[in-house]
Image (tube, rainbow, N blue to C red; front, side, top):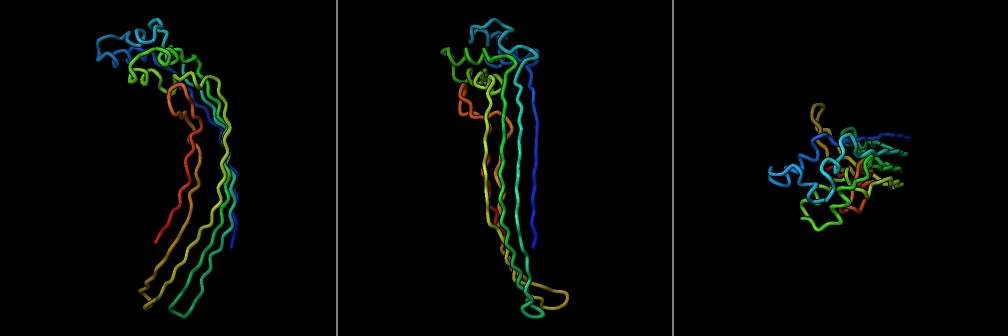
Length: 204
């Protein structure tokens, strides 16, 4: 029989700046290599001002995870050759994250692409998550908790000192968490702090 406790703290940040050829690249991509100023034509913003070099997405995350568990694992020697093992575990875990999203440039190109009647494929290219004004100075707080029972059972039989046969079953759980990045349903509509569901695991 035993117990377990954990307290994890994570602080991280990420800055993803635009390169000097970012706007030219998408202009050539959207025009099949014909016009490096295509983004400007679509947004109405002067060439060179849609994706300003050295500016971009700057995000910060404060994440914590606290968990505890108690467990037991016991073996009953039914006979000299036959053994039965039984284990049980209870786990409780809580995770929290505060996400702070910002754009060092305000995402004007994406805002213009959303407002103007341009092809959907072009809008999607211009409105990558790192250029989306929906993430301008946004702070979110999320929390999720999970508790689960798990366990194992094994029956083993020793045919001789060198040979043993057994059958076993085990069930456990991997708790969910948060992706520390930008997630959204659509351009202009953010869904930050994307959650990952927990998973049950079984073994025979």
